[in-house]
Image (tube, rainbow, N blue to C red; front, side):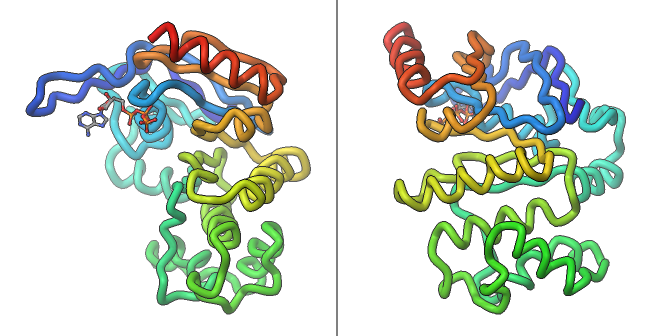
Length: 241
Ligand SMILES: Nc1ncnc2c1ncn2[C@@H]1O[C@H](COP(=O)(O)OP(=O)(O)OP(=O)(O)O)[C@@H](O)[C@H]1O
């Protein structure tokens, strides 16, 4: 199993009073599967992704990635696991503007004091369809191409799972489709495991499974649903909230 979440809870004790962002989430993301996480605004989707990726510590419950329980790790081991076993892509790409596509892909390894093999970097960019953009800087790339560089960077260490938080949120429809096709192909052709937060039923329908969150709890799941079915379920959820 790529990722297992057991009875995950997350509470924020902010100035405005405590907020329960996750309330007993139990689920699993199997290797070679594509899962979308949906839910109304504030339902805990980003918190779920951050806790599952080890970017934030849950208040209770456990996260297990490729057989390793994150709560058992010290800070150094957790940093290493996050770097080597977890990929993360964000809505706004988070590329370094002064670096080329290839340098951006190699950056996490370089920051860890390791060298990235040029051929492997080139292959990673080829895997996302950017073999001819290796030397381009982010401003010389379209939004969709920048997101593909971010995906290549996230996958470079061959992580057990790729988490994507609204990866198509900043892209137009056509470019979104290209990025979603790429993600689907990474699962189908390369056996990657992807967990993606999205508001978009069309994006969610590309996944094998859609997990629906309400008030920090998983309330429903859909398997193999088309965009219309996902949209109907979301509308029903939002009406009930
Ligand atoms: N750092 C924080 N401090 C306090 N409360 C927080 C913090 N981060 C998130 N929350 C709260 O936790 C709840 C879940 O937030 P989260 O961002 O996970 O929701 P979301 O489903 O991703 O929302 P959206 O779709 O609007 O991005 C919200 O009520 C939010 O206000």
